[in-house]
Amino acid sequence: SQKCYDLIKHYEGCELEAYPCPAGIPTIGYGSTFYADGKPVKLGDKITKQQADELLPAIVQKFAISVANAIKTNVPQHQFDAMVSLAYNIGIGNFTKSTLLGLVNKKASDIQVANEFMKWNKSNGKILEGLNKRRKSEAELYKTGNVVYFN
Image (tube, rainbow, N blue to C red; front, top):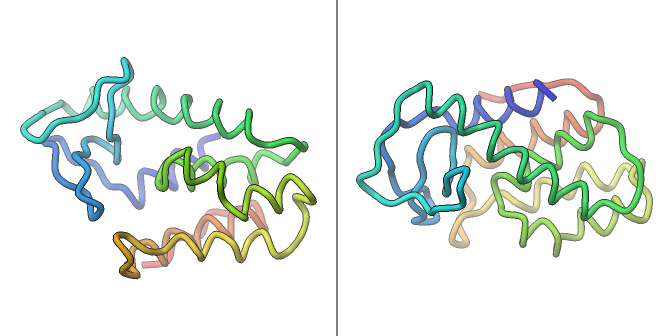
């Protein structure tokens, strides 16, 4: 939903020239590491704001499909949105192996699920304050359905 897009946009920001993210992966637009056709982003790539705005939903949809396939229970839209934002940031492989997904598939309403978001606050083993803030926002969205930004 729009809450998912807004959360991603807020924490990713928009960069029109490819840059290495904290994990060293070439990234462009609103945190995309690949294009809609699956081609990876390369340092030196440039896009327009319009291309970034078109790329985001194309990429988020790919993650939403993968998250939907990984979830074995029904969840409300806000919980789904929080998990898509997480998967978009940590990668679908990490998401599918996460304790968070395991808990969701056992009992999505378990209060412990929201705490699991906070385990994903590191890049290359270092805690990043930006990831702490994003995970708090995702956990809040998961728990309450509200998007709250921590700046």
